[in-house]
Amino acid sequence: MKIRLFVPFLAAVLLFSACSSVNDTPTESATGDYTESVVNVTAATESSVSGVGVEYTVNYDTSKWKMTAGASSGDAEYEFEHVDGDVYALIIAERIEVDAASLKEIALANAQSIADDATVVFEKGRTVNGIPMEVMKIDGTAYGVAFEYYGYYYSGPAGTIQFITYTSSNLTSTYEADLTELLNGLVVTE
Picture 1 (spheres, rainbow, N blue to C red):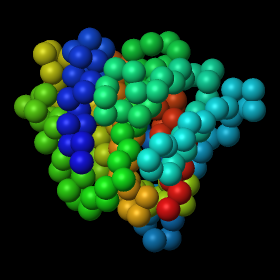
Picture 2: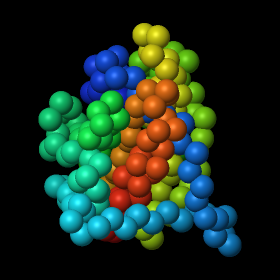
Picture 3: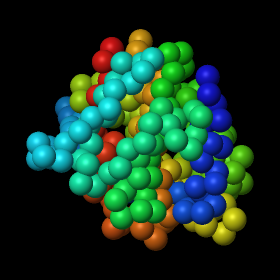
């Protein structure tokens, strides 16, 4: 298990800050779960990438996101950068299944290794494109830069997937819809 989730992009945290507060407004189902779905984009700008060892797809809008196959982090399968810059995402996928509580603890512990004040500000079970997963936001400050990681966490028969967006807190409201749309593009095949 690559538990060093946040360490690979410490340089990005220091240079660009990290994730934001996203005030998404999901639709609540009768069971209390939240359902997110991929936002439809025009065929001219829609693209996707697929997992290597874990079966998943990320659908994304190429007019908003540039994708690189694991460029700066040895742990990330794919990295995304917003076309405006200063807004990022990465996806880490492994074939190992981990229980959801442990996965969330690992994510928080790694954030705290960078920022002592890192705390979970939001967490909820959510169904994304038919698959249950966890959503979590972690706020903190590293070297004077306020950040929030906003990610979707899946672990099940397909393996473990951590899909995290990040930017500085001051850019949160500007990119809120784009961050949520990108995360909602995650489709896991169990």
